[in-house]
Amino acid sequence: MLKDNVVLIGNKPVMNYVLAVVTQFSNGSEEVIVKARGKAISRAVDTTEIALSRFLQNISKKSIVTGTDKIETEDGFTNVSSIEITLKRDT
Amino acid sequence: MLKDNVVLIGNKPVMNYVLAVVTQFSNGSEEVIVKARGKAISRAVDTTEIALSRFLQNISKKSIVTGTDKIETEDGFTNVSSIEITLKRDT
Image (cartoon, rainbow over all chains, first blue to last red):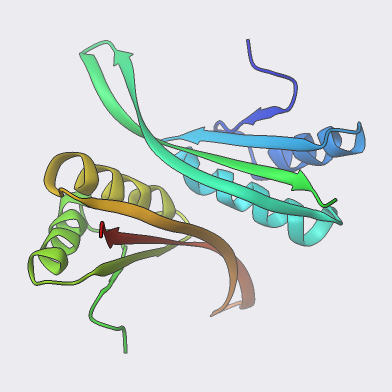
């Protein structure tokens, strides 16, 4: 199960995920991790850019990590790129 | 004009860009910057992941920076997310 402060980016409109990130910080989270795989990676970047520029104050990007995940599909295992963007409240 | 060691990701198949990155390092570059905007961001991550895992030795990700670019379209200015992934030869 995902931890509370993880926002997993899927195929919904980007503002859904922006709202999820903003809500986490409003609820007092010190850190929110935005995760995505494959084509959703662009939407993860959009999510953090929009959240930071339009909605959040005193929150910064702490780290951006990309990687490769092995996932199982109907046709066997395949590699998919992933991204984890960590946002953190400024201290 | 783009500097020699910048690979700008567009809509071509990902292996075209992987080849461009690998070629840069084969030609002696110490550092290659992979840049993309909008939906091509996912392909930029794919490019670096494939280049690093399958083709390049002793090269690492030095930095990953995301941002927002203002671009002019037919309908006026709009914001688009961007990414810059810097790959560097290990010393």
